[in-house]
Amino acid sequence: MRYGTTLGEPFLQALESTVSAGTVAREVPLAGRTTFRIGGPAELLVAPGCAKEAAAAWALAKAFGVPVRALGEGSDLLVADEGVRGVVMALTEGLGAVRVEGDRLFAEAGASNASVAEAARAAGLAGYEFACGIPGSIGGAAIMNAGAYGGQFSDVAESVLCADDEGHIFEVNAAQAAWGYRESLMGERGLLVLGATLRLRPDDPDAIRGRMDDLTRRREEKQPLSLPSAGSTFKRPEGHFAGKLIDDAGLRGHRIGGAQVSELHAGFVVNAGGATARDVAALIEHVRTVVRERFGVTLEPEVRLWGFTEEDCR
Ligand SMILES: Cc1cc2nc3c(=O)[nH]c(=O)nc-3n(C[C@H](O)[C@H](O)[C@H](O)COP(=O)(O)OP(=O)(O)OC[C@H]3O[C@@H](n4cnc5c(N)ncnc54)[C@H](O)[C@@H]3O)c2cc1C
Image 1 (cartoon, protein in one colour):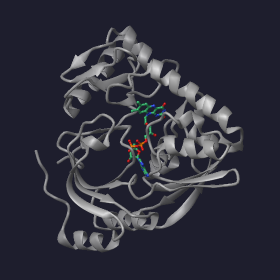
Image 2: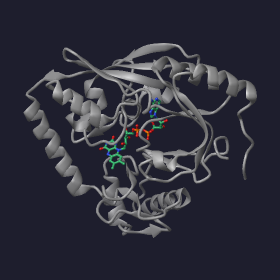
Image 3: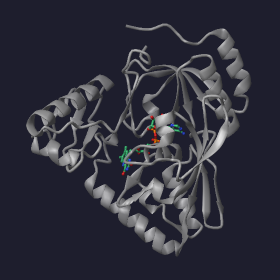
Image 4: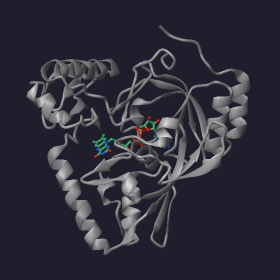
């Protein structure tokens, strides 16, 4: 079933004048904006030109009752084949600035982890190496408390610049951010992340480079990076590893349509070629059912699903 548009003329006109430095476009395919390479269009794609514009456009959508969601690098997302209604706010175009001052680094929400790790290294600042291979943005990292190889965002974040539903811009400090395993106050309260300040430590750029290269090598060995995916499909269940449970359940390589449990790393569902969002969602459900039946463990998806509930499907 398709639902009607939520976008009336008054909203569209107000949005056009709010987003003067950025861009607004209708029916923009999201597949190319996700690492799964899957997904239908955003009814409206807004790419704000700066943080103030992003906050104002966010508040405008909220005031008009238009669904709005933030998009970083799309590396933790499964977007429905029909797409999503309302506004998708793409932050990687207009909010990519990175500034270093002393041992602090400020990055806007759309800056990629790779570019932030590289800027930190070039400035002789250590601490963000763990994130150099996490293919997301600073906004996504702050929301999810992204982590890898013993490091996580909350280890180095001093504060996060946010906007609320009224468009107020304010800082959430590390003590307030309530970071846990793949969760945060910002995610829980549905705040828009505009940027973050990291507190790093001086170190030799060559030593930092060495650690980044080592982590990249380890990732390349263990992860199915040649196929589109959204990384680990499931959160780590208490006392277990999702990949091992899936493997032990005999699901390594299991396929539904073009979606497959990776042969290389059973914790990843990959797009093995021509997968639809429906294929991936069905495979996720199948894996959850089999693992629950075999081991009594309920796997929770780490990947965020867009467009699968009645209020945001089309
Ligand atoms: C090959 C591969 C390897 C990966 N390895 C890791 C890993 O080692 N560790 C790890 O933690 N993750 C990993 N991931 C998952 C993913 O990269 C991270 O979760 C990342 O932090 C998501 O950031 P993003 O910008 O892509 O977010 P998106 O996928 O664009 O969005 C994810 C969620 O965050 C929200 N969001 C994004 N930006 C903002 C913002 N500015 N304000 C408010 N909400 C926002 C979105 O609305 C959505 O709900 C991997 C993914 C892939 C494909």
